[in-house]
Image (cartoon, rainbow, N blue to C red; front, side):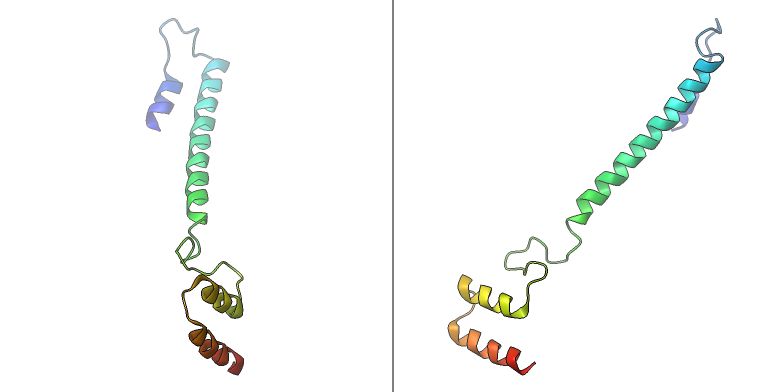
Length: 97
């Protein structure tokens, strides 16, 4: 970042390249470029971590968001994770609640 400001403030010997408005424009451009790079980094970090906000997201057998206990039980029976007997036992527990 310091290098950007050094380049923006650099003055040629002839004095006609970085004097006046061009010097200010170059300095403003460097600051805007640094802000844009910082915003891009923040956006990238947020977009990559947003998909991992749910602790079980993407795990095999993990319940989709908003799935009820009954839907989970039925899905596990349909996928073969549990037997029909286990399904009946767990359904009985759910009925008690």
